[in-house]
Image 1 (tube, rainbow, N blue to C red):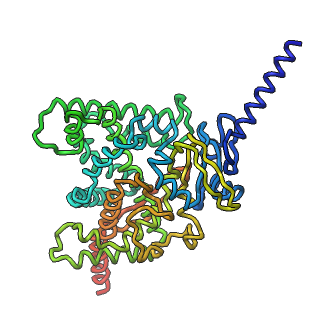
Image 2: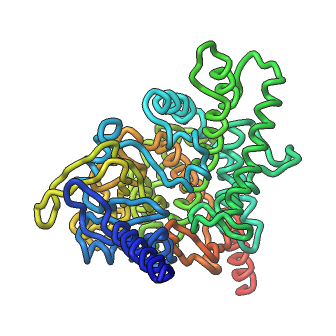
Image 3: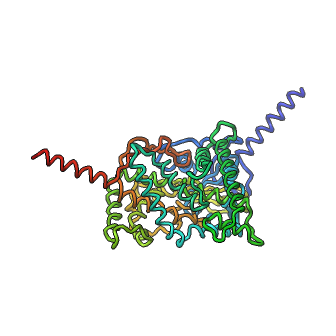
Length: 494
């Protein structure tokens, strides 16, 4: 009898728990949707790999079923997913008032609990100004010759190889450049390879959050731990040195740490260096690799891009001079190519915020009022915005000409490749400079032929699982080779 009573109580408790999971408490009316399985929610479906170039299947299926705004549960957190431009804009504009930056616990575990994305108010503004010291226009003007030299050097190196895997090779180039600028790190002079830790970190960054030895997520955490150990050691070594003038960003950070009454801590400083190293090379290398894939598949785009950059060379008074800031700013079609690449890349599949108090808003389809409960997360979905057929004709097509005459200086309701609101990415111009300078060097100095790979998978972040292997050839060497062959043919004719 007692066993039956206990069993009945357990069944009733589980049934009630499942019901409450599927029907969360809310003072108003939640947007439509499903909370998925208890504990897991819809996490497995969200992380399911797909090869679609359209809106991710997880999002598209729910848009068709529930509309542009719906609820779900990811990695154990209730969440409102927005594909609606107006709500997205409202979320970004109300940061610091109704919303604050938020990412799942798994992300903060990876990037550090004191990373810039998790900080708010005065501390966030303080760090943002520090980063602008590094990535502001005046610093970027001085950086262009370094970026150009790095690109030319690597392209020459790759041209001597039978095959170059673009994603990894470009990531290596940008990492070396950024690490030198940030902390004067040079891999060939260090006993440990800092980038190897980031490679391990990246492989598990967007994976199912299961911290068990052997999983990608566990390897990711191990990679972070190793990278942070190296950065901490560098910090201690730098402190032991005595420099009169700062020579890199790490020196600048140390100066800030020494100031009396500073709000910067060593933990925040190290997390900042970690995030900057990651953000500055991983996303940009993906974007450049995708741009090269698009150029490979669209010869008319490559032709116009090449013509723009060859015209820059022709208009120079000194043919041996390097790229200037004025020339960079003149690259109109290049910026169209970059805008179209990052629109389709959707490297960041979701931008997260959290409601700091209960929020009511009007539904789009039936004009009912919906409620976002306090503490719930909101995920703004850039792919749904960038691939919206109501805004972009034939949205999955690569068409740089759609940006002709369009000034893309900041985020908007229909373009958020670099975030939005007060957290618009401070490294946006740095990314554009790196992409534009690399493309300039590429199309003026080299040709390339695809060999294998180039397939794209999203999990939900962008990946090249088989890489993208190409054969890179210097144009001058090709021209000389053709000239010799032509002379030999003429000689044989006589």
